[in-house]
Length: 426
Ligand SMILES: *[C@@H]1O[C@H](CO)[C@@H](O)[C@H](O)[C@H]1NC(C)=O
Ligand SMILES: *[C@@H]1O[C@H](CO)[C@@H](O)[C@H](O)[C@H]1NC(C)=O
Ligand SMILES: *[C@@H]1O[C@H](CO)[C@@H](O)[C@H](O)[C@H]1NC(C)=O
Image 1: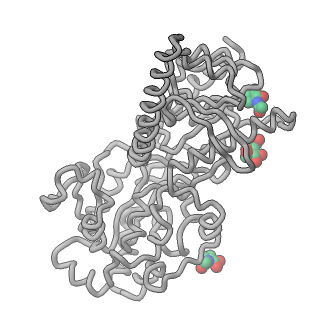
Image 2: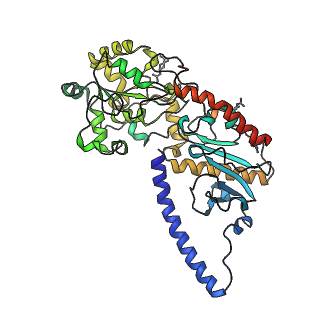
Image 3: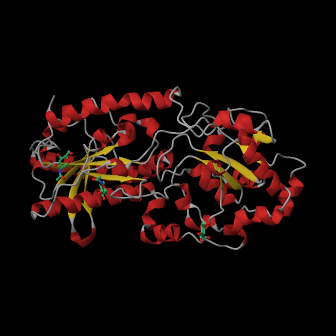
């Protein structure tokens, strides 16, 4: 996700860079012509006739630009600028990119008192554990996260395109999949990150005792990827050829490395896209986002590897039952109204750049409301980024000895002290 985002940003930045070069050249010429000094770029900020928004720790915008939002609302927006930061003395809002946020380096003291802080957080808690705790979240006034309760929600961020759910581009009919069982296992596993809070390797290892699983990644590896995929496969997971490779499997294991409400990653959506049945564990709210009731096999419904194996055995011997899991392909059916609504009401969310744009405009509008004296207190709470303590896939219980679980709990006191520092100046 981030990589795609950054690639997009680079593209945008290239354009911005060209602009800057042009503007710079022109201003140099003007300078020579008038024999006057070039103005310090940060001086102009103070004179901006629009509210000023600064991305504190992310360079989404090069040096600066005017942001045009709906209803003719405009703001002046800046990327991070480590050298000139203290000169930004008329900032209306700071925006923070969670995954690279360093809590030791915040724009403090938080002044003026009514300054708005916005948080963009699209990734799993592994990147910044303090934000698992409400104290740290509550430093921010508005959020853009995958949670449906965020101010700019994007629970569907990891669907590349909504049509993919129904698309039969990579889909392989069950009879053909049955023939392929001469060459491959019924289940595929592909992970390179083996120590997870959800203990997926422990689960898969157990399941392997009952049924054949082709494991191509670093974790529990037992099969080589075809050589054409070997180099850099992590960057080619969404290439057509690779999707066709996955589509041959009846089932794909999709166990998240973290468990947050509404955090459903491409592990799940990729299986849906190619028409393989995901064996899923992770987000506690997964049921709310399944295309149909039976679009995935959820671990919690078959609470031991043996029980899950028995269920898979049934599906292996009954194509009609197996096909019930694929109605989004075979009947082009999506019955989940919440999913359909989410898609039609918030069509922006498949594109990280648009999610950023939405947050910027929301903040810009609030800053204009503030000028007009119309803004109440608004504070981010736990529901905007809600990651309960992860359960082990194997035991379906919290394992306090799991190092992630331990460290996440441990980060609570960090969150407390950051809060004290920002709010009480301790
Ligand atoms: C999904 O399952 C529930 C419970 O079995 C049922 O009430 C509901 O009608 C089903 N929804 C769809 C869309 O099939
Ligand atoms: C923004 O959040 C801070 C920290 O929680 C809070 O003190 C302040 O009142 C909030 N401001 C607005 C305008 O909501
Ligand atoms: C948390 O935030 C949501 C959305 O902003 C709001 O609807 C809810 O009332 C808040 N919950 C609490 C306990 O303040």
